[in-house]
Length: 263
Image (cartoon, helix red, strand yellow):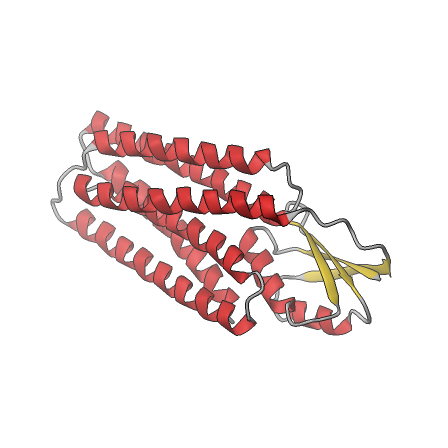
């Protein structure tokens, strides 16, 4: 068994990790992939030469560099059943709050809540793709990724259009009470998700990535709460539109990365 270590300069979030996994999935000689996103490092346990695998990674244009190839033993792989159970719970929490925030966002005329709901949906898509991908055919994974990416991009585009429309027209000031109360509950849901993920004490990258996603959601929840407070203080719609536009930008960025998975 050989271990090849790569430094991948542009691998800074779970989307790049998923793209690399899908790119290398057809190689039977690859036995295990060990990702270290914070240090932008990938260790590939494989048999045979690394040249063809290296060439496939290069096609993604992530500025990779092969450090070394050496003899090594296969690492002990963690039990996946507990991790999958936790990810299903996190997926359910995210998708549930997507529905709640979308509905209450329209009722309260809050673009911040609507944008946060799409951010929750974006995370749900990433978790669902990871769970759905296990044991599935590459072509099916790519079709699902493409549909999810375009769907998310369409929703983000509609969100930008609505923010722009409300910016130009005399739309009503959103109900700040709904913004704050719903976001507090969403914050609680994300804190529970983060607790569940950390409880697993897993060192595997997809669990660490889930923790990163959830931590980012907590920041977004705080932003919507702050926007609600500013709407109340200034009696203005502008804080809500600003936070909505910012979060829609994150959602669009996530959609583009998901679409890259389908190529």
